[in-house]
Image (cartoon, rainbow, N blue to C red):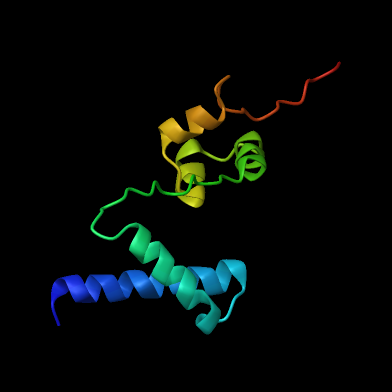
Length: 102
């Protein structure tokens, strides 16, 4: 089987799976749509940007405010330091220090 045929079959399967999963149609109902999509982009190499990643900002904020080290938060939530700074442009949340009244 040539590489182009294998790639076309993989693309067909990927689109079919997405229609079944996201739209809820049967495989048989998905096929005309898959055929139409493949005809529409035949011979082209379209670019489909990756879906934007959603970050659990409230959970990240809570972890930072509870005093968790930044490196641990980065590892736990699989984010880079620059991403943290993009999520919190005013500065990273810091642990709240209880004021002492005397």
